[in-house]
Length: 215
Image (cartoon, rainbow, N blue to C red; front, side, top):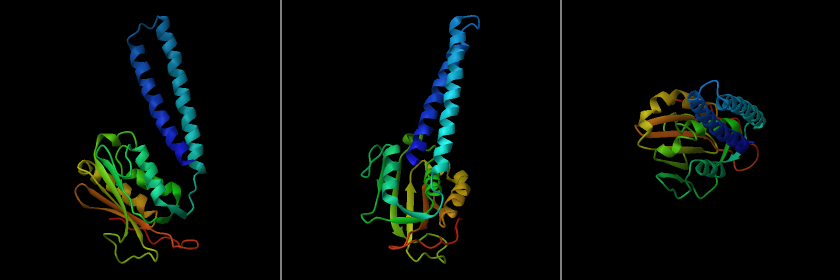
């Protein structure tokens, strides 16, 4: 469901671009011409296709699990890397640094995907235009240290020279998204974003996550 929703997003972007080009060509034609009328039909079809893909994406998103559950983080981040055009070792100025041991979060899948997407401006279409690095480690939150998680914390650190352009506007939304997961987010210095969420215990179902912490 998660991949299907992402593919629907990409497909709608392609359909939207096609619709824009058709509209520009049609504007250069006389309304009385056959080509103008045919392109009008093509625009109607593209709009309908965009609506259908949007409906399908809504169905996919509705089917995603929202309850708190155990989510392995490394496979999820590797999938993000593929969507963003990088590998674990990195290429093109975009790279992931992942731990050797698996970290399992205690969160809702939909909420976690939305929180991760919020770290990247223009996800996923415009992320190839800027350099960044994302690391995942087991650690402690940089703020709100009075709260604790018995199983520890997953800490995400995003760095990039372009982050400072948008992070001030993005911080409130990121704080809410990561806070809903029982974690939080902060910008310790320009060009760096840090987010965290509680890990699941090694065995058995996880406890309710700690209170959300933002900044």
